Length: 222
Image (cartoon, rainbow, N blue to C red):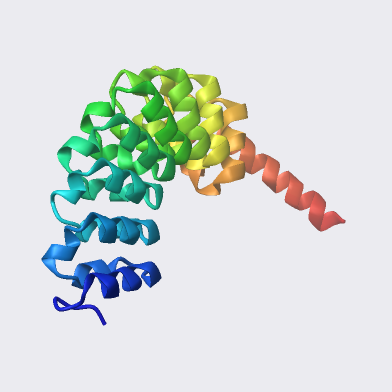
C-alpha cells in the first residue's frame, strides 16, 4: 500500500506492477516529481501522467513515454508539450481524438492525417482547410463514416467520398449533400443501416418497398 511515507524504492516497485496509475497518485509530492519514478509509472500506464508534478508534465521524455501508452493522456501534458509536433504525432497515432488538445497543430496535414486514420471523428478538430482536403476526409470516412458531417460542404457532395462514408456507416447519408435520390449510394447506405430509410427520397423509398414486397411474395410462393 503506497502512501505519503513510502520510500522511493517502495514506490518504484509499486508502479512497476500498477496498471491504473494509482500508485503514483498515492505517492508523496516529492516522488511524484521524481523523474525515475514517473517514467516507470507512465511506462506501465500512460494515465499516471495525471498525477505527475507540473514540472514533469512539462518534461518531453516523460510525456512522450506516456502518450505511447495512451494518446488521450496528452490532455495531462503542459500547454507547451500539447503542441510539440513529435509528441502530438505519437499521441494521435495511439488516439486520434488527442488532436482536440493540440490547438496549434490542427493545421498540420500529417498530424491530422494520422489522427484521422486512427479515429475518423478527429476530423471535427481539424482546421477548416483540412476538412476540405479530399485525401484527409477520405481517410476519416473510411475509418468512421459519420465523420462526413465535419467535411466541407463541397466534399459532402463528392460521390466517391460519400460512397466511402456510407460503406462504413449507412447513416452517413444523412450528412451527404444531394444523394438521397442517388440509387447506388442509397442502396449501399441501406445495406449498412436500414434505419437510414426515412432519409431517402419518396420515389426511391417506394421503389425499394415495391421490390421487397415482390421478393417476399416470391419467397412465400416457394
